[in-house]
Image (tube, rainbow, N blue to C red; front, side, top):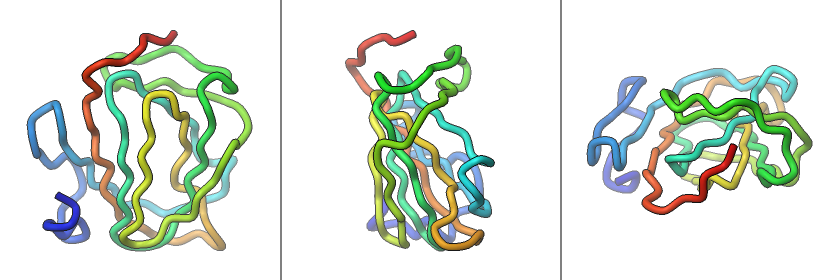
Length: 132
């Protein structure tokens, strides 16, 4: 889908692909310092971040190493706190898969604060382990 569609031309917000099983959220924001960005994890969906324009750093850490907050089922969102295990700098065309076992923090500036546009594909996981 990302190869055959220009994600940079899509408006912000949810773009349907296969209903709630697969869709893409188009996001446009400005990167910033780590302290301004939040850690997050999900139970139902894997995230596939695909950068369309700009540069960003995404931090990743294993869920076992993080302090996890309360799960919000309406948003499939778990806030978290902890240290970075790995970090990747994303450029246009790059992608990063974050499974439910991966806590991630996106929007971190690479060298300096800059605008970006990307698609975050939400892929429903058919079999997942329940976490608190």
